[in-house]
Length: 208
Image (tube, rainbow, N blue to C red; front, side, top):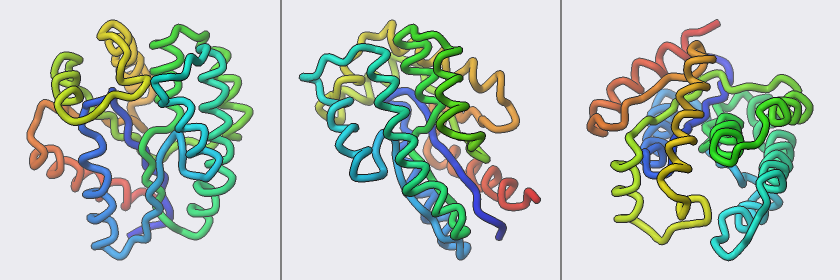
């Protein structure tokens, strides 16, 4: 269909983005597109070890340390997985990327946005997703879904006010970067969302 693309999926915990990741990969592969499926924090052996620390409910991690660990895992991820995959012509489909850092560590934790932007500029060297799908859902609905499905990790155990700030952070990012970030209304059915995703992915494939 087209040259390599970098797609990220974002959303508060419980918004349902994880439901759509394997479906998107299957859709792309059905059109002959090679897909690299990955996630953040994680994606590399080092990143996965840092993920265990960051998500461990028994860990107490200061906010700035949390952000630095996220960016450390991200840099390794870019060097070891993302950039090589794009160079091979693959489409990279990543569960979370830097928008999550601005939403969670910036708006959620209250870290200065300019400090996060400095790290972004330094460590990413201009690399941004071609498309970000942000799955948006009211906090109470997301929490109900989350509590019904699994044991909560360190982030998922945060209070509702934290997730309200995170959601505002995501919506602010979407308003600032409307050409890149598409807001998906996760109150819709899975089928309705997937119908929209088919159109969005086709548009992305047709870009020069």
